[in-house]
Every structure is written in C-alpha cells, then in structure tokens.
Length: 264
Image (cartoon, rainbow, N blue to C red; front, side, top):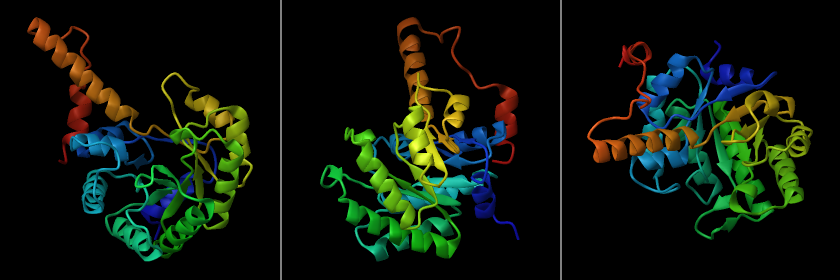
C-alpha cells in the first residue's frame, strides 16, 4: 500500500515542489484546496495563533495541532518539531513516534537550543539527529535536519556544511539551513547528496530561481501567518480610523472558501 509517507518521500525524488506552511486548520484546508502537493507546520505561526512567541508551544499542543491538520487535509504534512521537545535520545524518539501517530509524513529536528541561546555542539547535534533518524526510519517518516546557524546570526558556511554533512551521515533524508539562498551555497548543500529544503524569503529569489540553484523543496516558514496577521491588523486599523474596510481589503473568494470548508 502506498502510504502518505511514501507519497511525501516520492516528492523528493526529482524536480522541485513548494510546501507552504499553514498555521491552523482553516489555512490548511485553503492551501490544500489550492492544490499544493504537501504542507508543513510552522512553529512560529502556530505559536502566534495561541498568542505566544516561537518555541513556546508544548509537545502535547503540537501533537494535537498536527492531528487536527492531518485530519483536515488530504496531502502529506511535514512537522516543524523544533528540538523534538527532548534532551535525550529516548525523548526524541518518543516525540517522533507521537508525531507519526498524529499522522505526520515527515518532521524536522534543529540544532538551536533556546535554553542556552546557542547552537548545539556539532557532536551533540549529530547524535540528536541520529536518534530522530532511527525513530523516523521505524515509522517510515522523512526526517529533515536543520542547521540554524544563519537564522541565528552565525555566518559560518563552512560550519554549516560540516554540520549538514554529519547530519546526513547520521540518517537525515533532507537537509535545510534557513536563510541560505545564494546559488553557490544552495548548490554546495545539494552537492552533499540529499534533497535540499530552501526557505522562500520576501524579496528574495523566486521558486524557479531556487529550483535552478538546486532546491528540491521550498517552504515559506511563518511568512503566510505573518502576512495573514498583518492584513488583519491593517484592516482593523482602517476600521478603527474610518469605520469601514479598505476598498482593496483582501477578502477570501467565496468559491475557494466553499471548496475548502465544505467537508468541515
């Protein structure tokens, strides 16, 4: 039987696909209805729906969120699992299994530690990836290893490559270093021999350009959540100031909403 995880893994075999990041059930249904082949959670976007900062959501809350999104959509879901909510190999494995039970097709593990406000030592990070990869393999999930260097202000591409090479050897199937978009850097990561996820940045290279540079998968992180909240605030400010909505307020088309929410 061809499972949802098989479908997700197949997407990584050739070409380049866009995997946008919904932040709640409604946005997941809308993106599914638009025809994207896969979706991914966003830790920052989901936290914002709860009125919190990024990495302030509990594991139980994330698992429930994943279960709700997988029930709401028909396409594979990748999970931004942060540090997998654990400091031990057993704890990491437990998180992977909980996400698999919730219907995830894949997940990511990152090397940023908010408790120490730093990137994990490379040997520690590699062993954490190994623990996640072992558990993911048991459940058939696609594991993405994230190097957070550039997202956290550590401008050391040589270290990023060293880390990603180690994460690949530890069992990761997809490699991801947020904020890498240059042709040389994306190509260098792709040359390591695994599919590369690239974060689409406002004002940065478009999907076609990133694909040419070697991206196999493109995600948008919390951008859609930020855009949605920004539109809401702008419309609310206009309402407060003028007692009406702006003429160009971005309302959802009724046909799309009906298509997305019919089975809700």
